[in-house]
Amino acid sequence: MTELIKENVQHRRLPLSRIILRIIAITIGAILMATGLEIFLVPNHVIDGGITGISIMLSHITGWKLGIFLFLLNLPFVYMGYKQMGKTFAFSTVYGIIVLSIFTSFFHPIPPFTEDILLATLFGGMILGIGVGLVIRNGGALDGTEILALVLNKKLPFSVGQIIMFMNIFILGTAGFVFGWDRAMYSLLAYVIASKAIDSVVAGLEETKSVWIISDDAEEIGEAVNARLGRGVTYLKGEGAYTGDNKKVIFSIISRLEESKLTTIVEEIDPSAFLAIADIAEVRGGRFKKRDIH
View 1: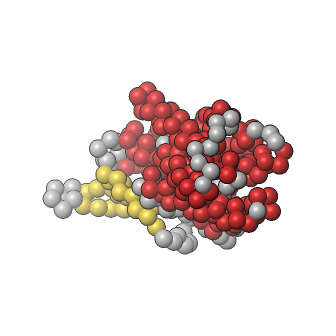
View 2: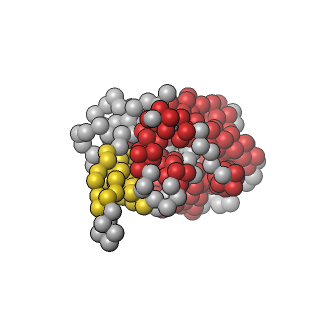
View 3: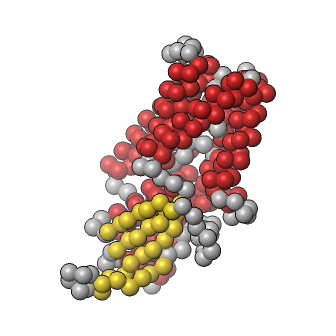
C-alpha cells in the first residue's frame, strides 16, 4: 500500500497554468538579478556573495563574459540540488541560470545607470535580492552556495547559515585583493542588502521551518513529503474542538528552499488541508538531516 501511494504521488503533475506562472516568475527573477549585476554592481566593481561573486571576479581577471562563469560554475551544484531536492528544483534552477547567463551577456554593453558607488550598491543589492527571492519562492535557485551548504551540513557540525557565512566571508574578503578594500566593503553592504531583500520577498524565510499539516489525507501527504523531499514526518493524534472528530496531524522540519515544493505537494493531494509553517531559530537532535532522494 505504501509503495502504491509513493508511486501515485511521485507521478502527480502541476496544472499547466501553475507551471507557466512559475516559469514567468523565475524568468522575471533571473532578469532582475542580471539587471542588478550588470547595470549596477559589476560596472562599479562591487560583487555579491557565493558563486556569483566568484564568477564576477573570474570575469574581471580573464575578460570572459560573466554569463559563461555563472553557467559553468553553477552546473555541479545543480546536480547536488537534484540529489537533495529532486527534479523540479533542478529543472527550475537550470532554467533560471540559463536565463541569468543570457541576460547578463545581453546587458553587459549597456552603460551603468549610475556611477555613484553607494547608489549602485544600494539599488543593485536590492534588485538582485528581489530577483533571487522570486526564484527561490518558485522552487529554484540562482546560486549554488546554499545547495552546497545543505550538502556540507550533513557532514560538518555547522548550521546551513554558518556555512554560508564562512564561504561568503572568504569570497568577499578575496574581493579586496581583486578590486580594492573599499570595494570589498561595498560588496559586503550589497550582500547584506540582497539578503534582506530575499527574506522580504519570500516572506521572511529563515534556514529551517517547522510544518504542521492537518488533512484527511494525512498519510498520503506524509508519504509524499518523505518520498519527494527526503524529510521524515511525525504523525500526531488530534481532535477537533468543535466537531470532536479525530484528526491525524503531520509535523516535519524543512529548509527554506523546500517550502515551495512542500506547499505544492499539499495542494496537489488536498487543497483544503490546513497548513502552518513557522520559523525555527535552532534544531538539535532527532533526525532532521534529510536523506538523499533516489
